[in-house]
Image (cartoon, rainbow, N blue to C red; front, top):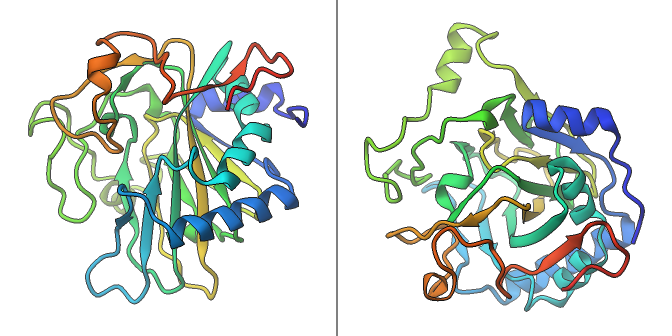
Length: 282
């Protein structure tokens, strides 16, 4: 496993802003491995596969979840990547578990943006030590990259809604604060929110808290935008079963893992443990 290269300034920025860019998380061989994995995944999608394309969009946006244990290229990448160690440093965690993986592909001409949202309200976990990695397999210009609201990871939790029709299918309407009108705020006052966004090359990644508000633009160039995301859980994260279907869902987990229990379950393997060599358990 490659040594980590996260310096103190990057760790401080992650904890202050809720999102950072880390260059060359994956080398050329790992990028090629993940590209092969994505093609295998698209040819054999899981039951969680989702076509998130907007009606009438000239392009196509597809996603799939939780394939790390059935797509061998994903398994090999996670087992040999420095990504879990980077997440451990950023979170300040002694032990890091894999929550799930997520592949996102926007074909050229996909104009529909991904709306502003936080990730954690869609999930079945509570805790502060969370970290998502969004690693790109194609060049991504700044306009098509993820955009973050700096500092928004400090809360509050905001009401999760469906991306296509803004329905409250998770927490009941009114039970959480609604998402602010970030784009409207910026149109009225460009200084109302501090935004973070980076142009990325294959192998670069952004790491962000699962509570950091973020969105993404469309893809207007000639290239696909393939991204491979890993969600990591730190020491303080516990199970929070929901009475609704989470995204992604883990059927039957509430029967095996009590509410408030650490995420100690084979579905969420330890991928980093005190930085000890050989601690990856994929």
